[in-house]
Amino acid sequence: MVLTGELPFPEEMRAKRALAKRPLPAGFPSLGTSMAERLEPPKPGRVAMVLDTDTFNEIDDQFAIVQALLSPERLDLRAIYAAPFYNGRSDSYGDGMEKSYEEILELLTRMDVEPEGLVHRGSTAPLADWEHPIESAAASDLIAQAKAMPEGELLYVVAIAAITNVASAILLDPSIIEKVVVVWLGGTANDWPQNLEYNLQGDLKAAQLVMDCGVPLVRLPCAGVVTHLHSTIPEIDTYVKGKGAIGDCACGTLHTLPNVCSSTQHLRATNRRAERQWSTLGPFALPVLAVLCGRVFSPFDLSVCLSVAVLAMRFREYAPPGSEIGYSKVIWDMAAVA
Figure 1 (cartoon, rainbow, N blue to C red):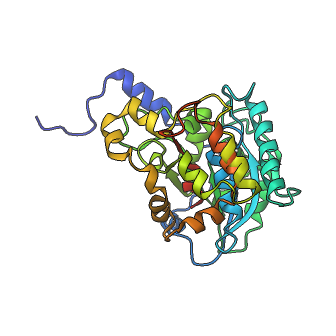
Figure 2: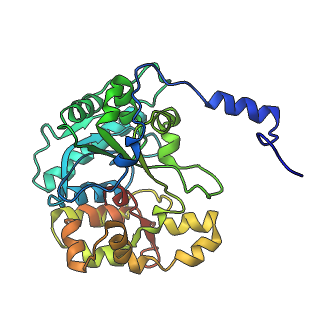
């Protein structure tokens, strides 16, 4: 049979597709042919960036913050935004944001970094709709940072959480689309059997806005892509623990928190073939990181890059008791910074 025109979807599917195609609010600029230019790799030199993170939710956010702060030769980190989250580690979206804010301050204190003017509280709830963006210190600062960029330069908005803060800033001032590139870790690989990913589901309306509004977007899928970046307790103890106050704190958190899904456990539950292919990746985290960053890392590089002992403590907190030898944990938020 030869098909012409649209595929013969059932009427119910046609109705759902029509509902998904929502018009954008007025005032959104169109980048046109310049979109492709914005998505080219950044030019040599320092890259202006802000980081949006639900830091208290997971361990990999701490690694990403430390990585960004300890890469001043390449990254000009201008702001860190606390993002909302709501699960067993928070009582509400607002509580999750506040705990993330405090966790960021804890990290910066251990790294002797002044937080004043650098760290900003974000949204306390996900978007209800596109007509009511959520005003916050994070959204206001993102708008100010974008509008302050010199002509011809771009601000990279690296988001490793539910993307509420970024979507709200765009809704509050759509003109910032012309000044930013959004790098978001969210959703799953296009060929993954489902899209039940935490950052995406944390604010579906914000994710839809960012994908539909025309802002230059680099999306790093979680399952099927950045799940390949994970590490083990022996690796963390060898290369991170004992390398400074920030590293020791990160090594120790792993035995006291409720267990969350490690990359190996996740692959076992969802894709046994992928598990067989990637279960041995843990010992090769450095080569994987090298591929993502486009450079070669030695164990010494890693100890410096991660700064070193809050990270080791935090990582250890996530392992269930008795599983230290075989346990591995994703640290995929680092991929967005890399």
